[in-house]
Image (cartoon, rainbow, N blue to C red; front, side):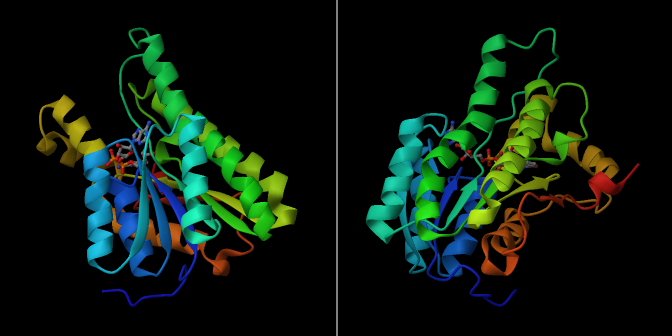
Length: 259
Ligand SMILES: NC(=O)c1ccc[n+]([C@@H]2O[C@H](COP(=O)([O-])OP(=O)(O)OC[C@H]3O[C@@H](n4cnc5c(N)ncnc54)[C@H](O)[C@@H]3O)[C@@H](O)[C@H]2O)c1
């Protein structure tokens, strides 16, 4: 059990993909740490479950149901932060999808969908969030990329491309606003215990098919938990990371260090 850190106490954070996995784990952690949250996801039922868990533990949150790849969803989230909680300090751009398939057979529409949800959505959220952060004179944006931005294997056609693009976007935001104290960093998780990998395992014929691959690719020999990823996001969101911007943080059990 890690003690509370107070790193985001009283801060207002938007978290996308908060209905499941890394987004949910980070939302629960941020709520425990005293942040006021705007939770965004298109899975209404699971989003309400996250919100109910937070409220049952006396945390503070509102929910926005919608597709993150639409500007209108970003606008509603930022407006909710302002009207419910008085401003915006942190954005965790985290929602993402991972349909796999060989390049030759990969449907053009699926490519567009992955790029829209994994990359364009982050641009749209930043478009709406950064002006509010500039008004406050500070802000922290954390974008979820992946170890697969730089290391890949056959089948991750649009996913790897989208995760590499996120790193480019992150650096562009960081250099554009560094002088005005709006920071932007990317995280690159390796294998994490979430639904995205349950879906992958289903497509491979069962979760036991995944374990040998994880052991081979990730020297830690295990998946990280969503909460472990959340602690890295917590640091990047905090004032203790005030000089950290434009960085790309691996959270991958040494996967990216291995041959
Ligand atoms: N799990 C891993 O091993 C791993 C590793 C590296 C990076 N990631 C990244 O972490 C992020 C979170 O994934 P996760 O593993 O927690 O998966 P997950 O499937 O558990 O959660 C993703 C969440 O995003 C939501 N979402 C997807 N598309 C959306 C849209 N258009 N609008 C609104 N909500 C949408 C889903 O409903 C879901 O709640 C993703 O960007 C993923 O690529 C995951």
